[in-house]
Image 1 (tube, rainbow over the protein chains, first blue to last red):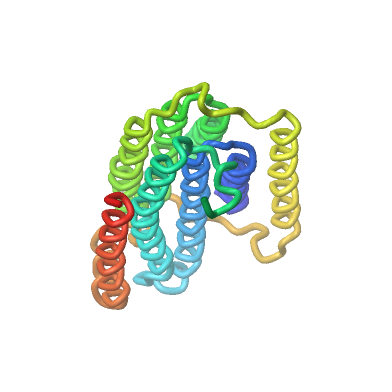
Image 2: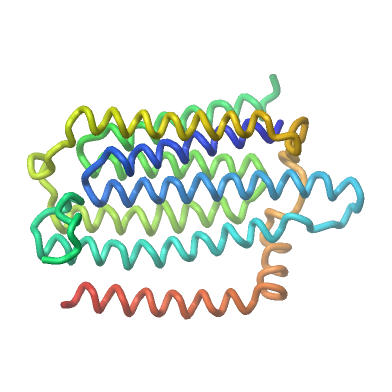
Length: 111
Length: 166
């Protein structure tokens, strides 16, 4: 499978996420689009790790080249989980204050 | 066309279609459900790449924990459909045009990059996605970041409680 296919797939998913952040006004949906972008990047990291692993296996049959990328993906998931918990707490607090999750209410970060 | 290619294209079409449905759904709960489908498609891609540990972690963490948290918050704050005014058509059109231009730019960039021309992926072989090599690497070379991430979780938990309690 050529690496280009995976790159195009991840670019499409990432661009859909960007479009969602630009077009939607609901803060929760914007947040979900950010998660979508994170996942596109994760998939691309795994694809590249398998690409380099394949080329390293030709040289050395016991090579573990590319394992770093999968560990990075694991850490990205960890950070995303922490980020979601804090971000959703902020959205709930914002809803308590303004009774809306419309991000246009947040254009001035005070009041 | 081999079975791997068939699965790749099916999963890709599934992922992109569900991702588009996340955007066009009016109801945020439908968006969450479509996003869960996107995560399942991405987990399928991980299995196709023999990254079994990440496939399972993706399902457990993203589809299981994070999206349930989203659903919980949406149901907690009870977003009504009419309480969310839509953006004007022009703003939406500009957003789609900007996203499409971004995609076109990056695709053009990838098309002319020399380093990745003719490179192939190792699809079903290779052991780096299995839990044994990953665990060895995680607890030997990456044990300090692992411990730091536990501190990060603790601080995120404390922060979420403090922000939510107020």
